[in-house]
Image (cartoon, rainbow, N blue to C red; front, side):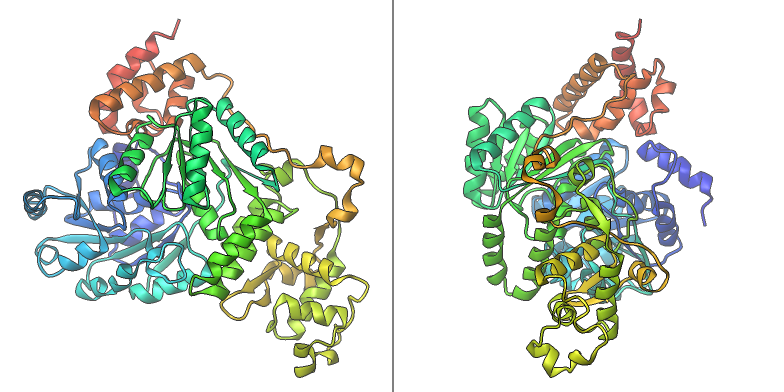
Length: 607
């Protein structure tokens, strides 16, 4: 086992950091010990370091399976820019280029080789069997599962790699997988007794807001105002249809905003060009369908807007996760209307997995309509409990009125427990309200002690209270098992240990009409937090310098340095190359390559 000092030294050398993020060290140690692992870590949480660092430290070459050519290119460009020999083997190469790359791999001149799942299988008995492989990293592992957000049939064949290379450690990584998808990934990849690492899904730098039932002209006006207030800041507007992406783009361009559409109706060449312009900061705004985003690693996306309701919380979390990957503050805004629910419902019905996708849509709708901390809802969906509000979502900033709902919670959870957690919310509501529905009669549920104990509360209110308990993590819905309700450990504390539950009053009870306006969540977007001591003129000068260097080197600006690094430089103002290298995010290679030019620029602003 390598010492802590060696790992930290390598982390600083290649990535510019002096401390690991949660679980990174433990995951790296598992891989370096030759053991399999499964990693569930949010976008921007540092998944790639978990395989890139051991790949550089262990003799041999790491194979990284990735689903998209554009995603491979982005990763390879960033690695090469940091002094790590990486390459991508895919269908975009000519035969001559492919032969040269394979020769480089055989000669040991490549440390990380990115391949598509098809290419990995095609080269399994030729190239791969003739090189020393130190690691297989299966990136975007949720693609292997039919329950995942981006199911790809070719991923389902990757278990043969595990069988063909039994002594090589396998690392499966994803940012997007609920409990059902996680089980499917582990089963299909056939990993050898993997250690499972589930990182916190909390992205506190992301501000969460929802605006409900806004007219189109008001929605467009709000979006234009926000973009005007965030000059030079990159963002993505996700739309439900190709036609909407085109119309929103036209609206923004008419307002003088550089925006481009991205959807499956465009040619591959057109989409590639739009993506390249976006990552190079030539285009400020992308108006896209869900087809956009998976293939980029752009760290300086400062905001995400959902023009329409996404199909699931899983998809929503993945899409907002593309903002603020550098850890700096980023804004997210969801525009919600019931018309979107109807349209997404039609898509779910036509999907071939109607029941599953309908349930996921219901959870997305519940998030949009919620009156409790939105971050708690998101985290609970991924199995993570949060005891308090986040203070960085619209509900926390404009809180509704609460009351002690402990007795209500106990009644509902008691009904679940007394039925052995076998029924869904609808049946539990039947029990509580004393309704002799078919499930109640057929299963003699009227004999339960909890039958009719909630007759004084309407069915609608019981359903809302159940959703609040679900959002807060007191109960869980097992939607691959007939949507049955299960009481969580947090809920058991309410049932058996006297813990209290605060609930939100129904909207019709909360406020008189005259006072609702001032409590309603505002559609306005909060501005980015900027350290008081930062020199804004220096930051802009450094941003322009980064842009010029990126254009000269034909690479995206964020690959040179993230926005977060530029903010630190503008705040600390290092005046020597040594001090420049002490900035978090500046590795040894980039210190030597860019130190002089950035320090020279900083000196112009130091009096």
